[in-house]
Length: 351
Image 1 (cartoon, rainbow, N blue to C red):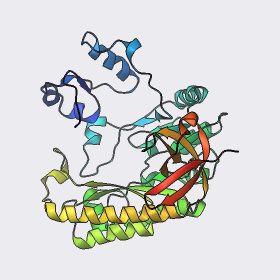
Image 2 (spheres, rainbow, N blue to C red):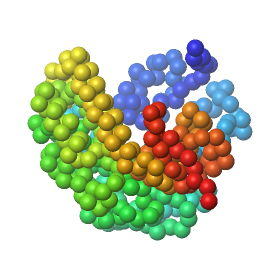
Image 3 (cartoon, rainbow, N blue to C red):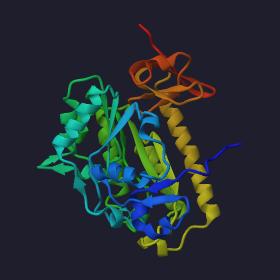
Image 4 (cartoon, rainbow, N blue to C red):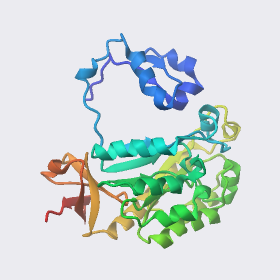
C-alpha cells in the first residue's frame, strides 16, 4: 500500500489561503498560510520553512522541468455565479512585457523546450497598449529551439490578431476555450458573457485557420437548474465546436458565491451526466487521435508513462515512449504516433 510521511509540513498559498486563512491555519499539518503572490511568493515560502526542520537547500532535488510556465497575468473582473476567484484574486493586473520577455529569454537559454503562458484571465493581458497577441508575437520572434503554448483564454477575449498567429512554427496548435455549458439558459444563470452560438463561432475561427488544431474545453456538469435538455445542448455544443479535449467538473458550491444558494441537481443525476460526458470526451479524443495515426509529430520528451518517458505533441496528444527515450529527455523530437488496442504509443524517429 501507499506510504505517507507524517513528518511533512504544508504551506498553503493561493485562493484557498486567502479565502479562509484562519481555518487553514488551524489544521495541524499546515505550517503557514501565505497570502502573498507573484515575485514575493518564493521568499515568503522560504521564510515559512526557516527553522522548521525542512531539508537544507543543498539537499533538495533540482527543480527541472521540460515545460516551464510564465505567469503573465493575475486577477479577474468576471462575475461568474459559481466562482470565488474574483473576490480573492482582485482585479486584472499584468506583468510588464519587458519582464516577461526577459523571463522567456532565460528559459530559452537554459534549454527549456516549451514555454507556457499562464494566468487567471490571460486574455486580459495588457501592458502599454500591448495585448496577449502582441506579447505572444514578441516571444515567438525570439531566437532558439523552443515552442510557446497559450493556455486557457475566455472566448470573448479571442482577437483576430491572436487567431492569425496560429500556424507559426513555434506556436503550439492547441487552444483551451472554457465552455462550462452549451445551454444558453445555463450560461445566462452562470453569468457567462457569451452565448452557445458565439462559443461555437469562436472555436470555428481557430478551426478555419488550422483544421487539425486541438481545442480544449472546461465543462461543469450538474450546475443548479440544469435540465436534461440543457445537458443535451452541452453535448451537442462539444461536437459542433470540434472540441478535442474535455476537462470536466461536477458542480460543487463555493461559499459566498451566488450559485451556492441555488437548489442543486441530485447526486445520481449529476453522476449519470458526468458518466455520459466522460464517454463522449473519450470518443472525441479517440476520433482526434485517429487523424494522426502513423503520422510524425514534433513532441517534447517528458517523464511519465508506463515506460518512464512520454511524448507531448504540439497539438496536445500524449503517448508513452519505448526504451531509450530517456536519452532525449527535455528535447523536441519527431515522434511517430500509433494507435493500438491499449491506446496511443509513440516512437522517436531517428534519422
